Length: 147
Image (cartoon, one colour):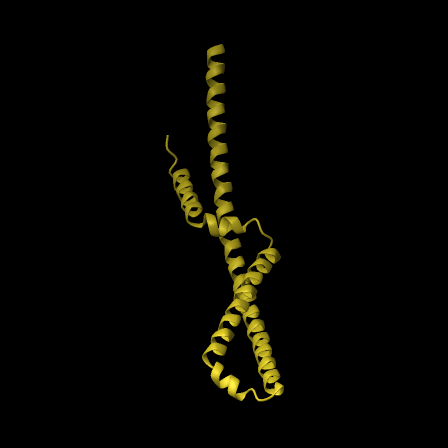
């Protein structure tokens, strides 16, 4: 006999696993702080690489203008200090954004995983009830044969 509730639940679980196996189910292995730290480390690397590329492009684009204006070491020091301050400001802003974004994302993933685990527990209970019914039927048939 088919159990429609069990079939629906198994379909829902299979679809969730198929859709979110790489992103959400693998995230369940992490603690919140580990997940956020790992993602922020990646964000830091990306913002640093991006800043280096932008500065390199700027220096290449305006190299002739910079060389003509570099009459003293003070101008060079001011340019370097400006780049460093700009890098710090951009990095801090991006890290704040990354922290908030990944905290919200982790919270949403945990919410979805909680629902997924609840569905798994419900499916387990349904299967236990079916197994108990089968065992009861088998034991009743055995008692009838012995009588």
